[in-house]
Length: 67
Image (tube, rainbow, N blue to C red; front, top):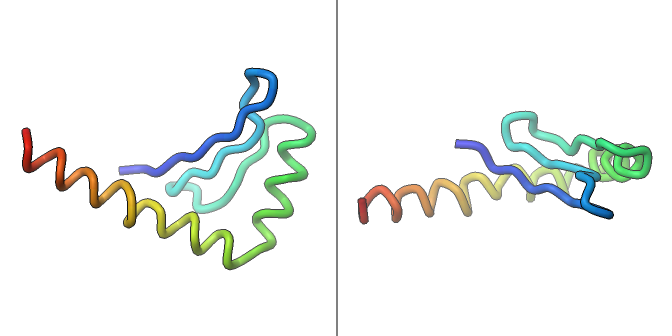
């Protein structure tokens, strides 16, 4: 299971957080700057990493039980 949160600007993916990578990745010039700043903030990274457990693992169990 992987948690992904992407940000888009003008229909182009700007940044992405992936729980398998564990940090933000930028895909545009501005996105690279945003990702670098967000990756310097330990509390932001901890919060994003916790989303896999809080959102994904919780909903997988619900979906699996209803299948």
